[in-house]
Length: 130
Image 1 (cartoon, rainbow, N blue to C red):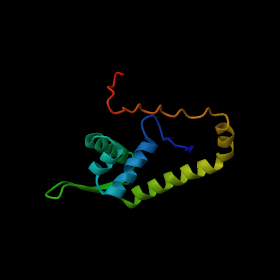
Image 2 (cartoon, helix red, strand yellow):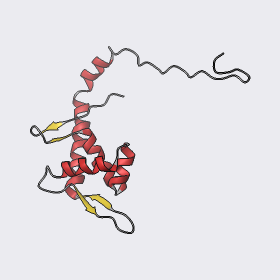
Image 3 (cartoon, rainbow, N blue to C red):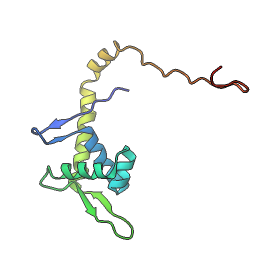
Image 4 (cartoon, rainbow, N blue to C red):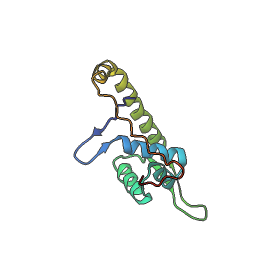
């Protein structure tokens, strides 16, 4: 299925993109930067750095952090963070609706997607080299 991913550049260094919004969304779902990072296949350190950078772009915080202790740390979206995710997802959905006809026209010209070659199966009694 074709998707549209939006990147909003405010200036040279500040932007909102699909990955940042997805990380923010996963923090909201998991209540943890560490769990959100794991769900995205990235290190906690990288996720923390990205969230810190993203959070510092705005006058209002995107997430609230509770530092670790016996039960570990936690993070949750602020009302502004949740609203940013909602607005971003709404913009993506509207863009897909607005561009559905031109996308359909372009998709008609796509080559069929290549399917991965099936893995050879070993028959009993045969070695891998035969």
